[in-house]
Length: 257
Ligand SMILES: NC(=O)c1ccc[n+]([C@@H]2O[C@H](COP(=O)([O-])OP(=O)(O)OC[C@H]3O[C@@H](n4cnc5c(N)ncnc54)[C@H](OP(=O)(O)O)[C@@H]3O)[C@@H](O)[C@H]2O)c1
Image (cartoon, rainbow, N blue to C red; front, side, top):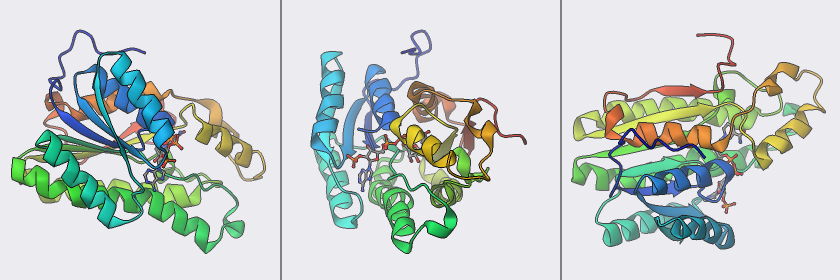
């Protein structure tokens, strides 16, 4: 893993809440932030997976806390945010990196498929931001980094529900940035292209079954640490003049500006 060892991102001592911290990208983000001195709260539904990430962080000398959470309901999300603030005093950084993969041909996807994608991605981000913002406003500062995805700008035929959520998250995050900038809060989006993960393997299998798939889509593959480095930068006060952006993180593979 490459960590910014010479550039001080001024993140040491901060508190972060990472949703999807057991996932391929979320775990890399949590590890990166912990490595930079951030105390990280790790959320997802699976305690065993979260504990494994927590153990890696603590073995490396970092600080992490497991906060098991199904973020498809508001009440547990609000309770989790409150618990973090009670224990840590504040939440400086919120990172959203959740989703349940929904891949397949548009004509074969059901309402339930769309609902699962909506609830596990867009609505998780809505709920966590709504829960955290009052605390950030009270503190007069905070940074939010939301992981959307390249398919929010460049449609992937096997991934239309996820892509639609990504497009919504790009807009939502910009709206949050605009609404709360005068209260010391920044919100930015990272839109990764394909990142090495189980999710990518599942998508690749689906693409192989869909005639309209663009074979070039899979030409580039990123690593979870590519995303984690971008999160660290956007969470850092060194990027304080960047707000409301959608950062493409796809190796330059979108054929447009
Ligand atoms: N991998 C890629 O190629 C790629 C590319 C572009 C964008 N992205 C986006 O990046 C994000 C992370 O992707 P990934 O590859 O790391 O996926 P992943 O490995 O499947 O991780 C997804 C995470 O979301 C959590 N999660 C799902 N539903 C949840 C819920 N209801 N409440 C709380 N946590 C929940 C999962 O934990 P539990 O199962 O324990 O709940 C897991 O930690 C997603 O938004 C994805 O769309 C990924």
